[in-house]
Image: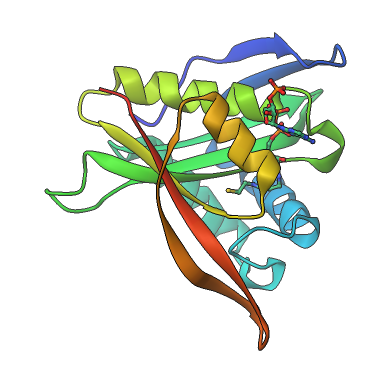
Amino acid sequence: MGNIQPRRLMTASGRSIVVRTALPEDADRVVAFVKEVAAEAPYLLTTEAEMAVTSEQQKQWLQQMIDGPGKLAIVAEQEGGIIGFLDFHNGNKQRTKHQGSFGMGVKKDFRGQGVGKALLAALLDWATEHPFIEKVCLEVVADNTNALRLYQTFGVAEEGVKKNAIKIDDKTYWDLIMMARFVK
Ligand SMILES: CC(C)(COP(=O)(O)OP(=O)(O)OC[C@H]1O[C@@H](n2cnc3c(N)ncnc32)[C@H](O)[C@@H]1OP(=O)(O)O)[C@@H](O)C(=O)NCCC(=O)NCCS
């Protein structure tokens, strides 16, 4: 179920990229990519140090994402290198399985060129065609204006704010904005 047809497209700077399902054999490269983004992107919920996962665990996780009926993990790839990643998980209960949340990241050098748009478009198309996914949700740090703009471009609407949901240090807290788009 967690599978899309590969899509080939051009970035704004004319580089050819492919958006496709993340496969178990991508495990090591996905871990390296996610750690790299975590190390430099300020507004992520998981820190680099918390991303301790073995190659085998990541392989199994990616296989579960393919097998899980309401899950999707996709990569954006350029010349064999991973430049973007998105994962979506639906609820694991009868009453929550119709909706789920996603997280995403794009390699720093490739931002602002449409890679995020391509990943999000692939997720929303998959969700729209999915037999039981009705709602796609996310949480974003209120100051993450680039991400907010991307989501607004796709009609993802704000549903509320979790005040001080993220604690950076004793004096610094961030609000989280809850957003969602209905796909049915
Ligand atoms: C958020 C993120 C995924 C966006 O990916 P991206 O590939 O840069 O986004 P795109 O190039 O597809 O841009 C899509 C839209 O987002 C907005 N946007 C993206 N980068 C922007 C920038 N540098 N300045 C202003 N707007 C920007 C624009 O509205 C843009 O639409 P437009 O091209 O029609 O103007 C990327 O910045 C990222 O990985 N950030 C670090 C990790 C992160 O914060 N993830 C989100 C957690 S909720």
